[in-house]
Amino acid sequence: MMTIQDVKLLDLPKICDSRGNLSFLENNAQIPFEIKRVYWIYDVPGGEDREAHAFRENQELIIALSGAFDILVDDGLSRKKYTLNRSHYGLYIPQGIWRVMDNFSTNALALELASTKYNTADYIIDYEEYRRLREAGEI
Image 1 (cartoon, rainbow, N blue to C red):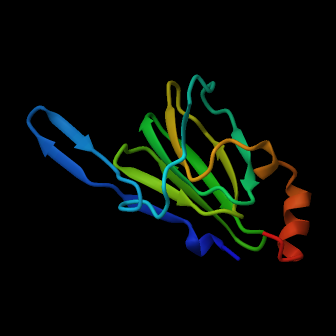
Image 2: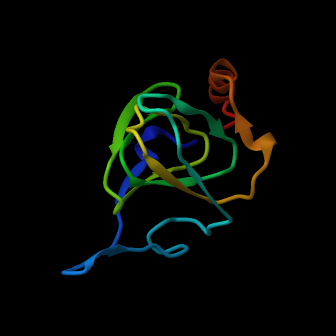
Image 3: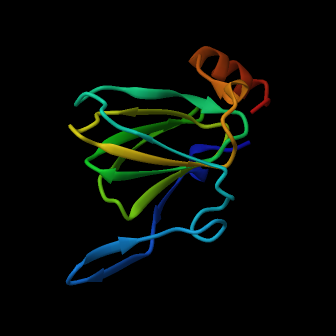
């Protein structure tokens, strides 16, 4: 069973020169999974919340490509908040961890890399159900 200790802030490769910076990632190199889906979140009104859920199977890496936002991770026993505001950092969130994205700056852009294809059955969107599943050892 994953805990918030398994959530990791990853410092992605960063190549700097006078023309600007470049960062990259590769399957199973900087992140511990093969990318099956990529999506992004944008046009979130400043200060708003989004994305309160957990996944049964999906793992994710979340990167703030522009702007800033907070991610609260929760394993049913402990919570920790991360602020993403640099595009060469990514937050790895394994399966079974509740997360809430909030405090979006105006024009923030969140890139999300996922280990599974989209599947609505993988989402747990009710926090009380999440707690019951954790207590039963099902996620």
